[in-house]
Length: 85
Image (cartoon, rainbow, N blue to C red; front, side, top):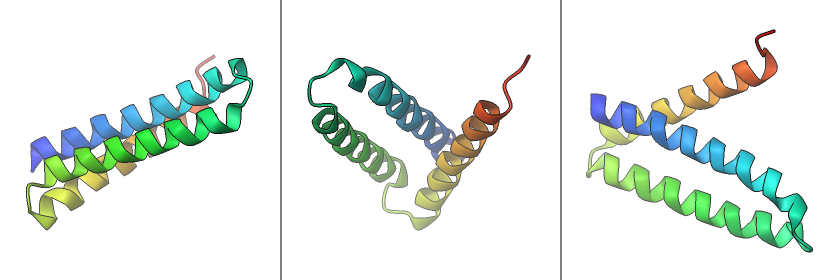
C-alpha cells in the first residue's frame, strides 16, 4: 500500500507538471488548441495506465494511489498560490 501511495504521488506530480509544460509550450504552436487536446489525452492515458499498474486488481491499492495523486495536487496548488518571497 505504501508503494501505491508513493506511486500515486509521483503520478500526480507528473500529471500536473505535464499540464504546466503543455500550457507553456502551446504558445509556440500555430494551433494551440490541438496541442492542448493531444497532450490532455496523453496525460489522461498515462495517469490511468499508472493507476491500473499500481492497483494490481485491488481496490484498496487503487484508492491509496488516488489519494496520493490528490494530495500531490493539493500540495502543488498550495505552493503555487503561496510562493516563498
